[in-house]
Amino acid sequence: MKRICVILSLLAVLIDSQAEGRILTECEAVQELQRAKVQRSLISNWVCLMQSESGMDTQLVTGPKTASSFSFGVFQINSAKWCSRGHSGGICNKRCEDFADDDIQDDIVCANKIQSMEGFKAWNGWVKKCKNKSLPNIGNCKRRRRRRRTRR
Image 1 (cartoon, rainbow, N blue to C red):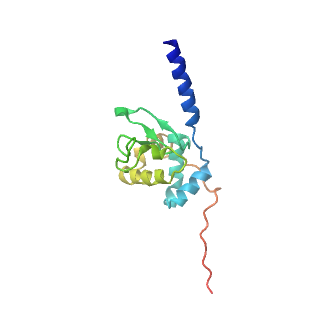
Image 2: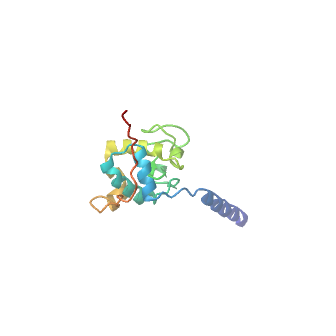
Image 3: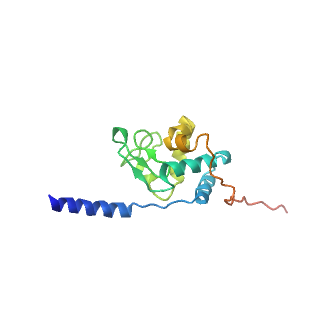
């Protein structure tokens, strides 16, 4: 019995050490959101949401929560409604595991869908830490420049 506990403990440490994701900076988050063409006036809310839900960790998986659901990625997208574990599904028609990697473009698409259907109030972290509070100042992040066409 003691041997099994030791083995399980070692496995937990090994899995945990491999599960650490990339922690985005505020400006990296802004760049990703701009790349996805997120409405500029909402970017500070999205950055605050990402900070409050996941600490900007792109590979964070938490749970189980209610009904044995888990939450995935920087937006903590929940498997009870929005995605399915192991196969495409849910309202976003995605594998939940796809939200727990360093590519957050698909996460942003699903998060936008959640926000358009339920608003930012769908995320408890946003309600507690962002709603009616001062939002991150993203003014120091470089804006993506559009290429200007030169006329000849």
